[in-house]
Length: 174
Image 1 (spheres, one colour):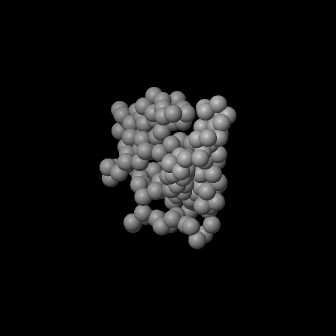
Image 2 (tube, rainbow, N blue to C red):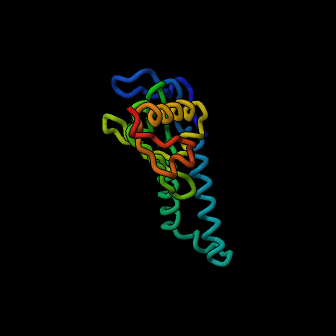
Image 3 (cartoon, rainbow, N blue to C red):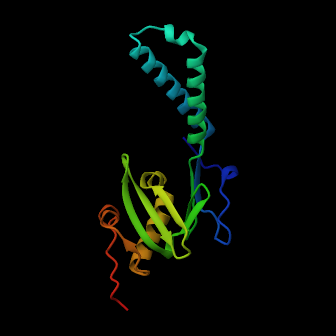
């Protein structure tokens, strides 16, 4: 679950325009996710021990389960993303989308990661699915990607061009 209420709005990076779109993970969603993990781990332990509950009588098991749930809560709660007209930010890392010099895509787990580098040598590695989860953020970012390839001749790899429909930059023009 995501929270895009005005009170949770991101501050823009220093010297950049205003934050236009944003989201943060909701506390409720992170809590429910942590509960889901606890249930899944308990079920897995129960099944792996032959449907016997004796293992749950040990306090050490509950300590490990609670520690895992707490870690999952804070990892889930950390998910956030914001964009302005010419920048995108995940957590505190950001790039100027209209000044990109490198746009590369790499497979990671069940999604693609974009590795973006701008002319100020700032680098952002972000999951493509995280950007596309919010259509408004993706629209701002994709316009910047296209501009950077067409006007700035940003370097791209074949996977980025194929997946995102980006043209190949022609370095011989001008």
